[in-house]
Image (cartoon, rainbow, N blue to C red; front, top):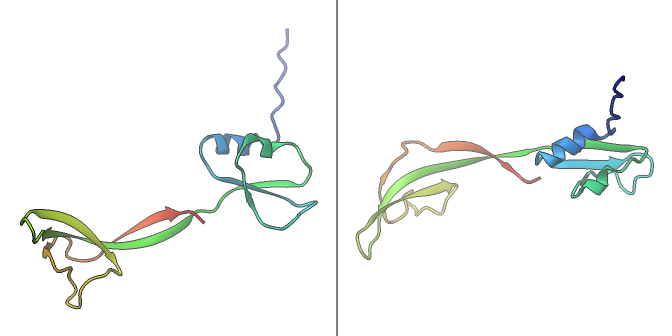
Length: 116
């Protein structure tokens, strides 16, 4: 007996991406209320409608500057490590008042994804 090939849902690629945790967006090009992309929040968005267009939501990347430092609490003298973000609320001399020593000699930078 010959096996039949299963029909693949036209939006299978987007359904799999959504199930894998990607933020999928859609818009309808035939009867647009607006041209905005709309976040897919449940599987009902994948119904078969003419003109539906899907995409993975673009990632927004932000660069964060930081420096780690060792400080000492004035009330009990306990040392602790903390992080200053750039630009930060540093005092006019460039250091929080309780800093003993910078751990990082220069500002460090990390790129992080943020919601669009």
